[in-house]
Amino acid sequence: MFKAGHIEGAILIDVTEKDFLAKADSLLDKSRPVAVYCRSGRRSRRAAEMLVEKGYTVHNLNEGYHEWRLYQEGKKT
Image (cartoon, rainbow, N blue to C red; front, side):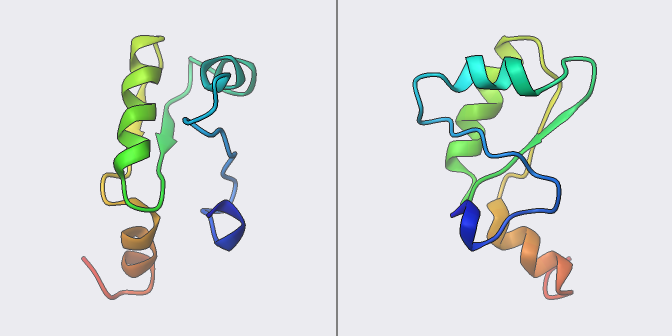
């Protein structure tokens, strides 16, 4: 999905991978808020929960990348 489209500046850290939290810790800064999203919102919810438990401030794009694109195109408010 990431190759098919993503928000500019996004970093792919796959929540389904065993080393998700280790990768997050190596790439993210706990002093800065983190936004997470996936295609539909299910995996990002899981990622958000895991990151919050590790001390990150997390904003989850609940309805996923597809809904974000509709908003960007002015098709959703």
